[in-house]
Image (tube, rainbow, N blue to C red; front, side, top):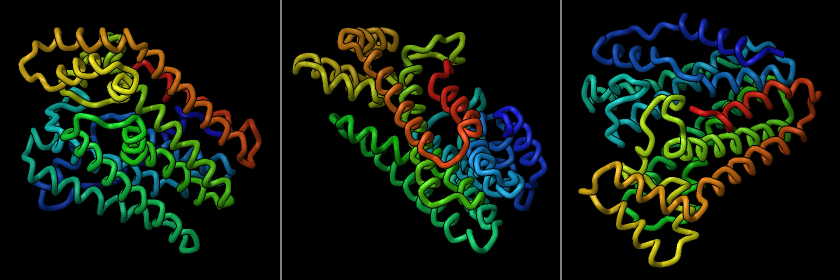
Length: 324
């Protein structure tokens, strides 16, 4: 079995060899710029790990691994436009560096390129790969619209938030693993279990993202904390607080999220005080642990030697219990 580090290196070297330089350069330069920013490459690595788990040559999964990385970047470019985010990984976002119109086209083009790579598979498994790829892309778009809808709603339930997070973030984790399993000719049952494992890891990953935004150590986290509160984002922490608070506290919390004039640090401290009073940090940590345990339960049911599953377990732990 390959280690996470080995797969990261194999994929990075392969990805570096792909050419995305075409005309017009005004379209492809932003694409190359977006793809050059170093990320964790989580989704392609998950696809390669799944392929490796069932003993198949990981070279067969490299085109789909590229497709998944391109699909992920398509969502990031479009998300940045919708969120009006000026920075990503410490650099200007594509729409900020070029224009919203160019960024929309760059994202659209990335989706087409992703689909092209996804088709590079044996004809016997191609329908299953494309079905999984397309359903995942569709759910990601639906999840993003739900997220946009939440910006206009004062109240959303925890269930609403988790379903949005599943669609927008977690399904791509699950699909990456499922596509790798399909390439390795795993059984339908094992492919579905692996997808469930990935989806639960993805949900835990998102909740940890929400938690770190407020409670992370800035020196390790690598950016300012409290940004979600400043931007009035209704994260797992917010919806959990609304669920637990009395009516007076709910109204106070909502008023902070309505107030556009409040000094940012004062707002962060006021909201954090409510979260602390309601034990929201501990509740979120428990939810993250629950998703991790659910994921392991599904992984343990897969018909593969326990030793082969070890790398996936390590990666899952690293993703869920990360500090940045």
